[in-house]
Amino acid sequence: MFWGENNRTYYQFGILSNGRYWIARKQDGAWVGTIAANIDSPAIKTAPGAANTLRVDAKGSQLAFFINGTKVRELRGQAPKGSWRFGVSGDNFDKSNEATVLFTNMKVTD
View: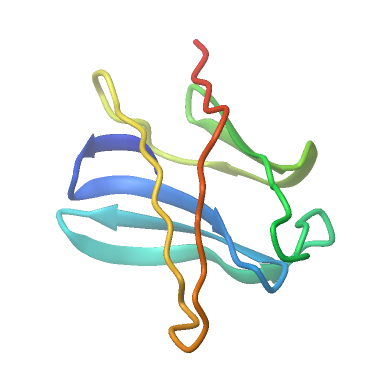
């Protein structure tokens, strides 16, 4: 999650274990639209236990999205007017199989 004004307004960039990614925006607690939904990307490592690196470059209103060093999308967005927050989340959408989500080596740069 990035460009978070609070826990109800933010953008989200994520990957799925089936090799797809998404970008979405939540505003005032409601999803206001999926910018990219379930887009296939060969950059995503799908093997069990595989590590993936996600990066968002935010410069002004320009955003660039990277998976394992490969740029997968660019777009313009509306950055928060003041400072902003970021965060991470994980989910196991396949409730029939147990899964673990682990976040390591997080870095935020200015």
